Image (cartoon, rainbow, N blue to C red; front, top):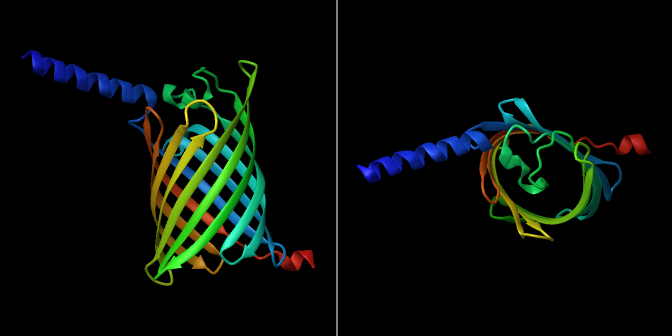
Length: 234
């Protein structure tokens, strides 16, 4: 009986903790990505993301990112860029892990990043290696604090063509802090994709976002639109 009561108490505690930190919620990310060609070797990266703790509600984060790409060749791209991130982590305590553990709903981040992408093909499988360095300038207006953090990221992505229209996409990305504790987070992703036109595709997938002490489940809907803008620059 004592063991049974202990087991029941443990399950109740785990359930209560999950409700507090949001692990029991299935959130959603709504995303747009663009690679806009402006010259033979140059393109502009555009990106916007809306992230929610629940399905399209309970706002968590806005991310806007842009960058200038230099295409070394068809399989190698170097990028330098900037991102603005607005975060409201107050809904769940666990979201404050990487922000000093302070309860605030007015956190903004200006981020500079450098990136290198390598692509290769094995049989019909398309692989992409993305290496990224980030310099993060975080401001908490409520607490009147500022901090600078540095982070490295590596993503291995595999795309599996099914037909000319349908494909599968998988990736795993690890985030490493260059100060304090090294491990920041890991993202594991799987999706089904649809090629609408030559420069437009959509993906619907699932993301497992693992932090040091919590895990979040997220549904993702992404639009990729890559128009050629070279005519505008002639």
